[in-house]
Length: 312
Ligand code: 6CS
Ligand code: FE
Image 1 (spheres, rainbow, N blue to C red):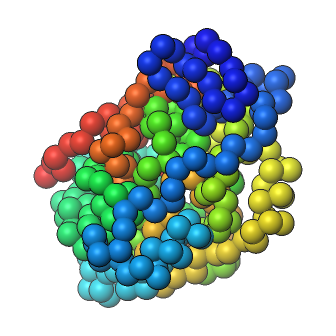
Image 2 (image 1 turned 90 degrees about the horizontal axis):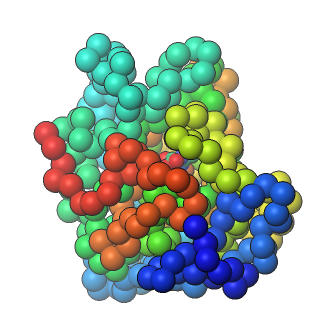
Image 3 (image 1 turned 90 degrees about the vertical axis):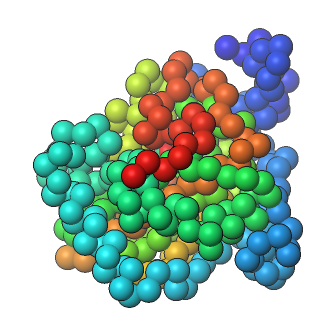
């Protein structure tokens, strides 16, 4: 409940401030329009991790950086086999962490995959990966969310434009955009098979979204997001101002992207799947509070509420 609205920052209660208010009632315009980010994109410094100064500066400016060869060809094969095993595992068939494509029932995503799969758990603990997350976030980190997206051929539905942080703030209670996602390509990403599109620089603006969060929104939002969807005019303004880029990396390459960068992907009607492993690192200085715009926090398989040892 908000007890005061200063237009730019909302006092939620006597102890917490909402720096990024969003999901106003649909009949109210998103008060005050865009909010310029009061937080850095890169929190760490050169010399405190594997990323050189020039690349850190690029991440600060663009909100993303690419690692062309994170996995070897053998590791890609190993993880592809693992995904096939998971998607066919009868023990997971009815698991709530398995999200299916509407209509075809094909597996769309598997959440908490770093706790289900030992191979993914190893990635989530690999020093080369964790040290980069620590440097980007300038602190100790933990996995806020992990998932594998299958984006199957012919019937892979895309993800409309969105800011992950808008959801992680509104529904999971992350106070600040001090989180970074790592998307590891397990198949070649082409312009035509649903490769991720980003608006470089958009992470510097928080776009409040109209429309309150329905109860248990996650039961539908992981298939098709309705709450927390930015207005088309806002997307148009961002695209005009910054341009749209597409991540068309080969299998084994990876994209590090800021929690608040505007991104999305088209559907995949080609025969070629676009599968990726998705690890979200949150700063231990940015622990989830009560949701800023939802009645209940989401389940922990979607949004961890505290650092967990990867189970295996
Ligand atoms: O709601 C979420 O947390 C997820 N949804 C999308 C479209 N991207 C981020 C995240 O995996
Ligand atoms: Fe996303």
